[in-house]
Image 1 (cartoon, rainbow, N blue to C red):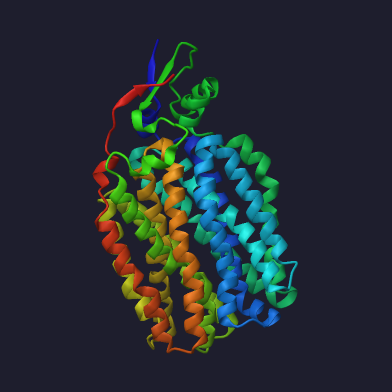
Image 2: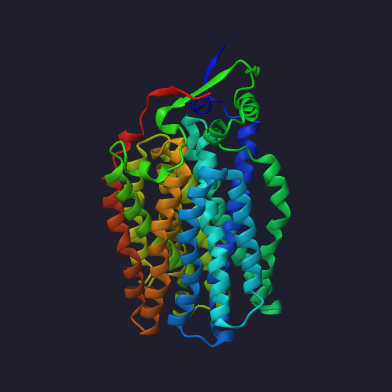
Length: 442
C-alpha cells in the first residue's frame, strides 16, 4: 500500500495540460468577474445623467455592489470549504451574471443598487475560490506567476467593459453593457464538468476515486490503485470550523495585517475604478478620451500582475509587494498634476500596475500564506474585510468630487492608503507558511 502526500504532489508537479485547463477556466471566470465589476464605473457618467443623481448618490450606488462583495467573499469563501469549491463557483457566476444584467432593466437608483448588491455577492464570492483553486493545483516553483497570470483576467474584464462601452453606449445606451453580462451563464455546465474539486474537500467527504483521478492528472506517471491511501499536512485537513484556524498557530497578527493591506489596496482599486472616468472628464477630457484612461489603467494592471508574479517567484514576495505599494503612492499622487497627455497615460498605467496589479499579487501571497484546507476561508475573509475599504472609497471620493476639491487633492486622498498597506505587508510573518507536519487521512 502506498501513502501519497497530495500537497507534495501538487507542489512538485510539472506544468501540464491539466494545469493549463485550470488556468484557462479560472482566468475566464475572472474575466467575467472583472467585467461585471467594471461595468458600473464605465457607465457611471451616463447613469448619473439618465437617473439624475449627484456624485454622492452615485457613490452609494457604486458601493452597493461592493457591499455585496464583502458578504459574498466572507460567506461564499467559507461555504466552499464546506460544500465544495466547484458548486460555489457556479453559484457565484449565476449570481453576478443574472443580477448585473437585471440592473440594466431599471432606471430607479434604489432598485439598481439592490440588484447590484445581489450581483456583488457573486462577484465577491468567486474571487477567493478561483484564487484558492489555482493556488492549490499550481506547482510551487511557478505558483505566484500562475495565480497572478490567472488574476490578470480581472483587468481583461475591465478592458472588455471599456471597449464595449465605447462601442455600444452611444448607440444602444448604458443598459447594453449590462445586458452583455448574462453570457457567462451558458458556461456553467461546462465549468461544473471540467473544473476539479478541492483535494482536502474530496478527502473529507470520502470521494477517493475522484481524488485518485486528479492525482493521476497532476502526476501522469501515477497509476491509481484502490489500495492507495492519502496524507496531508495536519493543517491542510478540512474540518467544520475553519475560521478559527486563521488565528491559530501564530497566524493571528499576520492575518490582521493582511486584512489591513486588503482594506487599503481595495480602497485604491475601487476609488480609481469608479471615479477615474469622471475625474478625467471633469479635467476636460471627452468621455471617449476618459475611457481610454480606463483601458490604460487595466492594461497597466495586467503588466503589474504578471510582472509582480514573476518577481515574486524569484524574490521574496513580501519585499516585491512593499515596493509595489510605494510605487502606488507615488504614481497616484502624480495623476492630479499637469503633464503632457502621453506622460499622463504612462502614469495611469503605473497606477494600474501598482493598485489592481498589486492586489492580485497580494491575493497570491495570501493564498500561499494559508494551508489548503482554509485557503478559501482565509482569502474570503481577507477580501471580505477589504471590501469595507472598497465600499467606503466610492462614497468618500464621490463626496470629495461633489464639493469640487482641486483635482490633485482627490488623487492624493486615493494615494495615502498605499503607505499604510506597505507597512502592513512588511509586518506579515511569511515564515508561518513553511512546511507542516504530515498526518494520514485516507
